[in-house]
Length: 168
Image 1 (cartoon, helix red, strand yellow):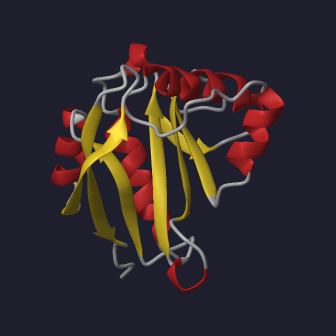
Image 2 (tube, one colour):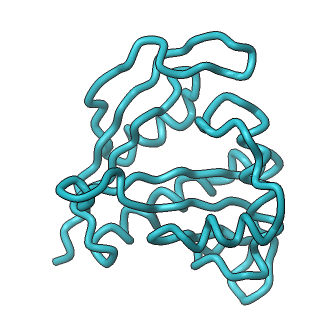
Image 3 (cartoon, rainbow, N blue to C red):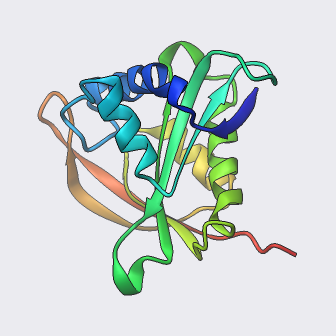
């Protein structure tokens, strides 16, 4: 597997994976899918970094997952990043999420971010929580009922933080 910057030809498979997570209604806050490849490419390219995980190590390969990395806030808070990760349901359990999170952590320094903050990790997303904690993220708080899932039920969300790895 290889994690690399998103390319224009990745827009369609990346959009399909993103929309799969949106439609599941149990992780992303978005309710509306990305409707065209052009809209998806514009959205992904507007991020500070968007990377995809592809099978194999060459130029080809199937897109299995992606992440977006961008400022968590504006102005005096823009030095802290936020990220979203999406792995195709058919590819889960193969270490793709871990590879994407590790790549995003490595990108923090080069992108001039001091750390990475997750604002809304849904409490029922136990696999993601285990992964983040294994990778050294600190749970810094919980918002009771902060997420409305696809069924309309309210779930707690957790906030996590990881300082940028030192480059030396």
